Image (cartoon, rainbow, N blue to C red; front, side, top):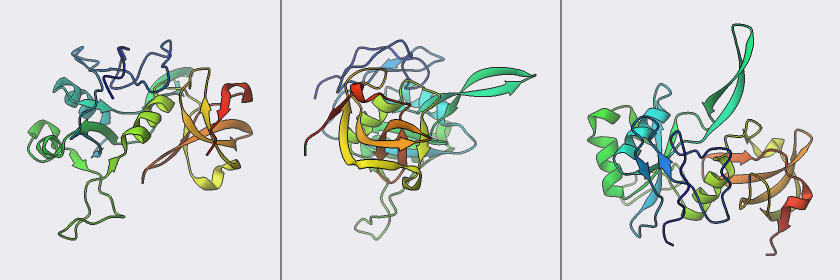
Length: 224
């Protein structure tokens, strides 16, 4: 895998909604304050670490990591709020207090344990596994799974949502690829949620996220 994209994104790992990704590409990330940009490029020693922040500082942590040359991603979405009697769209975390960062274990330890500017950052541990000393290791996400999650969430679509399996009515459990529209390239299961046909993407030990409505003509069945 080579560098995956030359797309510029704004606001800690999220691309402009006017940008369309092609399958198997994810955008650059840009520190919204400094303008520093980082491309996602394959590293044989790199892993997608799940990092937890306190006090809603995921975007702050994400921007800091990007400024240090780390590809970091925080999934955001637009939500409608009422301020002073007026409707307004604001960006809110889709997965509260979590940052996803692609780096080596050595880098992860430095930023989590020995960087004063990130004193509010900690590992999100994998409670379904233990290492040689009997402790839970930091949770990491497989590359393809994380890339798929980014493609599903980078649009900031206000109709995306985190869901649980009970709220899904899967259509035979078939896997599909989205071949057109803002979610092009996303792979997941077709489900009916809130009365609409959507595609559900899983993220290991974190949960599931569903897209906005996708018409059948935009879906291609993936044969097992």
